[in-house]
Length: 352
Image (tube, rainbow, N blue to C red; front, side, top):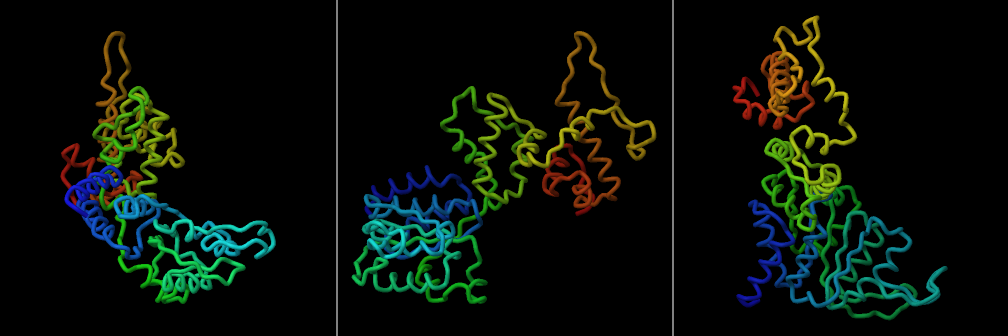
């Protein structure tokens, strides 16, 4: 690549691999390095972290970008059909083969093929795939003629292939052939600082009146979330937020509901505004009295909610003897979320 091509590639990667965290900068740098070669690349990382996006990015900034990019989910194809899908078949090769079919490897010649969930491939197919990678040739099902191919192989899995190899479910030689270069895709939780940029990216084509906004409390909730579904989960949350709150600003409580729509109980919100119990249910700490709106007198709803939240944090800390992890469980919050709220209200951390 010349200097101009490198600058174009860097610019393209920043538009498709969003974020300026150290992990993302390092990933983009590695992609630029491997894109200059034809080496096979194995992508690892949790489900939803964007492995196919990375595979396409490698193809797009390589010399093969003008040719085909094929994506194949090895775990979604029935075991009896995967050989035909990958290598093609001749007419009459098996029941239902009514015409000749070109497989993904042959169709992608000159370009790149992405084999997703390679860890789910059955063992006998692993042997055939290894032979294709060694010989750089495929043989259609029902044929004896080998056909040369020129294709770059990018594969991915969320499985621990080391464990699969130890258990005899994955071939060691195939692992080394696929993973000439191994790139680890970071989880979203490990690069939470990229969340605001990702939200802007997911909203780039949303009309202004349909676009929601997240205030500081909501963003703190998102930053503290564990994101088991990674970038895919965040993308779905942004779409859900735009649908439910078009043109509105989302606060911390709304963000919590968006993060766990199935587990959010509207009764929790009603309970938060309920009048205090007379039997001392607030464990010796008097609750702030409920305010009754007076004609012409505005109520600062945000301040009222914060007062209730602060009161409940005090109660939980008292019950937990100041142990933050226990208090967070009582409040059904993540420990990191509670710590952020304590910082917000200027509460002294008493114990870990």
